[in-house]
Image (cartoon, rainbow, N blue to C red):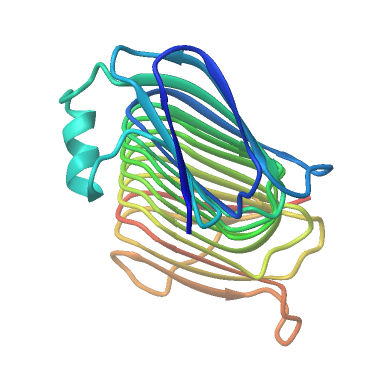
Length: 267
């Protein structure tokens, strides 16, 4: 398969005819990936800013890669600590909606709008914004905030201290945090919310009248459903198993924390 490549050392646009997957790797700056529903093939790359070291772009067998190379988690951490911290670019990609996207950054912010395929975003400190995406979204940050809105499908988030806000027509939701709070707003209902935190609070909002099965385990945190604190079956810790309407299905909400509270509300 032929390979095309570009060395970008100044603001530049690049049009690529055959794109079936997008991979972006940045240190600092910003990346915006926007799906164009009218675009059936190809991608448009616009680099508006680039630092002294040139940005690399290449396409091989339908995979478009843009950014600076760094290997694995170790490379990501090194860049977050400041090594090669002069690598900075501001990138905007317009792609077909059906193209899977993978973004990895150290400090650069990442925004993805309107894609309809699997999405993976990993950052150290960069904030992540995902809007109007359909498909499975997997997001990992160290301290970067995560904001997912109008999502359709499953969402998986892992962060240490980045605040997490999720909303939309949600499928299966899983969130792992250390200190950050978690807010999940499901349109009507969702089959599963599984949240695990140390000290972060978990808040889940469902549609009015949605049946809910709730499981909460915590050392000192409490469980609240529609403004009413639920009784624990354990004396010194919180252990709650609540079935709202037996046999009615509905949302299954599970939270495991050390000190964080679980609050579920409807309407």
